[in-house]
Image (cartoon, rainbow, N blue to C red; front, side, top):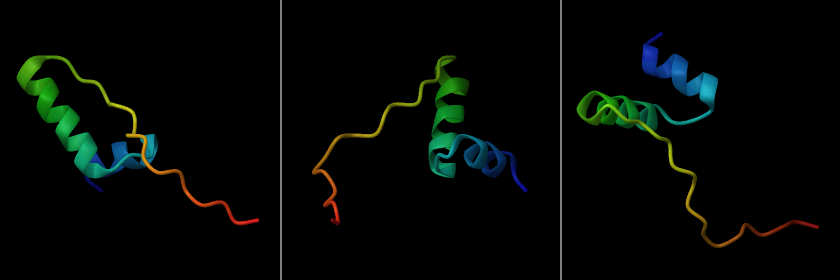
Length: 46
């Protein structure tokens, strides 16, 4: 199993997010994971 896959499963985030954060860290030396964007709320089922 790849390192990105292990990290993504442990943090419950996508592998693309892990790869992007690692790439940003290698470039800038800083890395943050932004919160999900707020959008239209999901419909609640009674």
